[in-house]
Every structure is written in C-alpha cells, then in structure tokens.
Amino acid sequence: MLAEWARTLTALPRPVVHTSPDKKTYVRMRTGLWVDNFVTVHSEPVRAGTQVVQATATPKSVEWQLGETSLKCDDGGSKDGRSCGYTYKRSSAGQPGGAYQITAKIIWEVTWTCDGAGCESSTGTLEDLSMDSAATPLVVSEIQANTRQ
Image 1 (cartoon, rainbow, N blue to C red):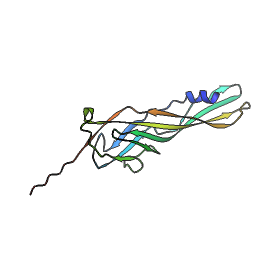
Image 2: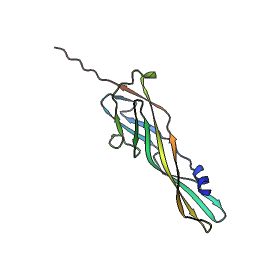
Image 3: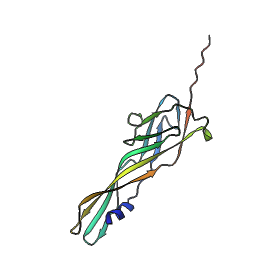
Image 4: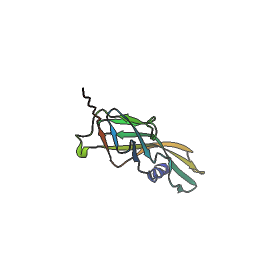
C-alpha cells in the first residue's frame, strides 16, 4: 500500500518533442526524433512507522504518434535520428493547417524500495506510468524536380 502511494507521488516531467530538421521535413528524408525529459524520477519518501518507501520511475520507451503512422523507440532518441527516426512517405499538405500533429508518450517502469524493520520486502515493481507531450506541428513537404529538354 505504501509503494502504491509513493507511485502516485512520483511527479513525471512532460516530454518535449524535437525533430531534425526542426519543424519541417521532406518526404523520403529521414527525420530524427527525440524528447527532452527522458530521465529517471524519484518520489518523495513515504513514511509509516519504521518503514520508508520510495518509488523510482525509469524511462524505458517512447511511443510516437507521427500523423501517418506510430512508432516505438527504446530510448529518448537523438538529433541524428540513428536511435529513433522516421522517413515520411506522404506530404502533410492535406492535413489541417498543412502539418502533422506529432506527439510522444514516455513510458516509465516503476520500482520501489522499502527500508525499515516493518518491511515485508525490500524491493518490488509496480504498474508502469506514462506522460504525453503536447502536440507539435511538423510540416512534411515534397521536393519536385523538373527537367527541361
């Protein structure tokens, strides 16, 4: 019960979405994806009698909604797109505002520790936690090549 309470006190940071290139990309060009706040978070200790319980949320993946598809990455991503990226197949021209609204959800694994004489166990795992980013517009354009003869 104390572990669940500590889990509810774990303040998760909201992911902030980034793309490379920034805010605009092109069809058939790899776009790097990453988030800020892919960090481990600790709850405040919860005390009851001689027991002190603390929850720790460790990021384990990011679930992306990219407009034309979804994607799961096992880390926070990177500007170069090597660890997390996507190559768009279609322009965003037909989307409201001419842009895909992309979001990222960080999934955290939650563990707990208990110190003190009254602890039945010293560690355990709880249900995962998640936090969604705000929607971020991403314009996906097409490059047209014309040749003259």
